[in-house]
Amino acid sequence: MLASNNSGAFVRRNKALSDDFKKRTSNKKSSNMVISPILTRSPFSIPDSPEYVSVERINKMNSIYHLKKLEREYDEFLEKKCQVLQLLNVIDEVFEIRDTLIMRVNTLRRQQRHIRIELDMI
Image 1 (cartoon, helix red, strand yellow):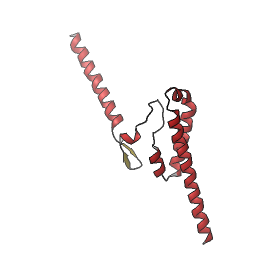
Image 2 (cartoon, rainbow, N blue to C red):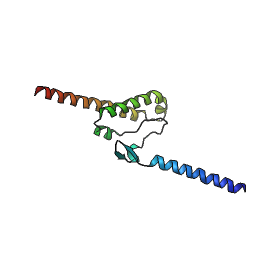
Image 3 (cartoon, rainbow, N blue to C red):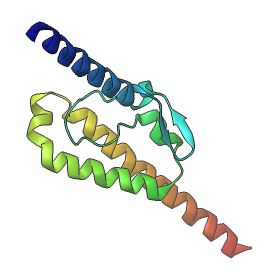
Image 4 (tube, rainbow, N blue to C red):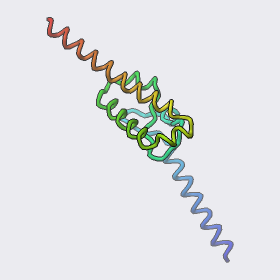
């Protein structure tokens, strides 16, 4: 009788783990665009880490608001988890992402300023 109760609990636990795995690996929707798990897979698996964004994807983004939000999340993450990132040897990757976000925001702002100047000249 004990063996059957234990096996039932084991089956329920495995089903719960399987359901949790399916939720984590299913496609995520972001701003009406489906992003595959491959694009959002982080090279570091640390609790409370921000959404992973590749450098190529950052360079395609045009929303300054979204870029600034990501930059703030990466800054806070670096402040809180700096030592853990150093131990895992991934701090350089996180800095690269954060720096790319900063550069992209500045590039978009310069483009906007340039367009405003051209419109003022007309």
